[in-house]
Length: 458
Image 1 (tube, rainbow, N blue to C red):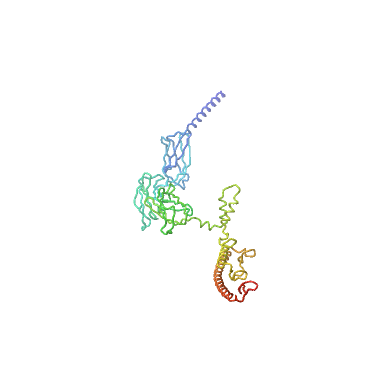
Image 2 (cartoon, helix red, strand yellow):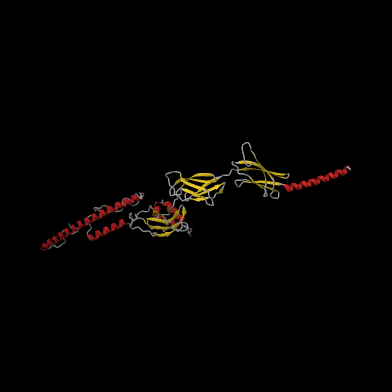
């Protein structure tokens, strides 16, 4: 009998255990709190995610000594398994416990006080936009008032407005920088913000690459303007003989730009842009870029030339050599002295004049004992000359030699005139001697005149 009773008790325990397990599986609760909106919402579901109606929900403040919450208390879920709680007036941490049957579930959540009525102002450097929200939700039909902070300032946008369905009000752009007070009012709440409005930049143009192919860029409130009219003309103070192939009318592309041709000579132009009844002009100096190249150190010019060469057969040595030879600023000028130079040509001309002036009769200054003394290369020429002198000294010496040769040429002309006068006098003397010889014919002695050259001559 005792053993039978024990067996019956074991069967009963197993049966009860199975029933409790099913009840636990079917009745397991989940509780959560949504805080996306200003008013929190409690959700109670079973383990299958099904809403639990008539579940008991208890809300309590975790730190009751230092915090308070008007929503603390006991609630019952509706058919959707939810409970709506009031918005907190200040940030608070609460514990939410849900109970249904013999099952409970709890969670702790931080509730934040809603922002309430707010306003913001965007695009303060263009056409400002005022936005009004209440608990982060756009407010339609809220009242908006705009006044200047300084009573002596002016702004065309002052006045009263009402927000649209998006909770916004569009204001006009400021014509000058100004500070305004913007006040929004809705359901007995109000909020005010002080905002600095900046006058927009308006229509602007900029010109880049003025020493190459210029690029004109047109913007309106810092935004590229397509189809703006651009006129390029010579500036009023430009040289009367100046010209530029890029003068004329243009229209900006989708990037707000116009590309102009490079200037063939330095020139000043006036560029005017027009868009939506606004006009802006600027005066620009366009250059050929040659001056900048001349100011570059020669070594930098050589390096840029080498970098510009593409790979070629046989290397780049010959091309670099030619560039250095042609562009080296140390090359002697064309007027510098030397074989075949202009100085030699001047000497040859001078000699030719001497020969033509008195053929067969060398001027008194000719020869080694002439007035000019020794004729030859300048002192600085030849192996014993000052070859190490600077090019500038060589040019000054050449200039002095040219001046000296001009003086010699003038002296040669004067000497030639003197020589011609001497020859004329000698001819007269020869005529007189001839007459005297005729008188002496009776003596029977015939011979050369006394002044004739030779061993017996005078």
